Length: 203
Image (cartoon, rainbow, N blue to C red; front, top):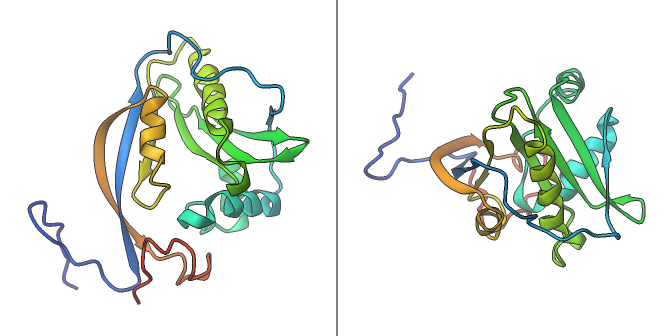
């Protein structure tokens, strides 16, 4: 089998059935001097200690289907259950009128460098500052731990075009890029082929 190597000074073909993203990693090296969002009384944050797998997948799809999020949809029940049950992983639900409007996952596997592993809102909750409020909760929880020296996350060209600017406005600084190539989740049946029209289906 021939192995293709990424040409870092030119073009590299992506095989049919695959998708490619440019991933940007961002970090926050100190706690913000002032809160990045004002308090709100219309949204509550609730720890989701033991997510039901069907409920988790449904919310994951609702938040991420326009951007063809697939990271958790490729796992079988046992693998996903084990991952969500890791003691260093914390899931939270932002609730409005008792209904989830997004998802927040913090990973403290490295206690000095926690990661915002997943973050997003359902489409109808986007706008009006709910996302900034949710990020403020993540930042506050991470930096409330004395071990924290760096908080980080990543986004990609498959995500909302506003995501990178949003994270930077919250105090994160880009520090690294990577290329991610994966099976197109629409061809795997994980999302409809009409999703993410900014990334054409090829294959």
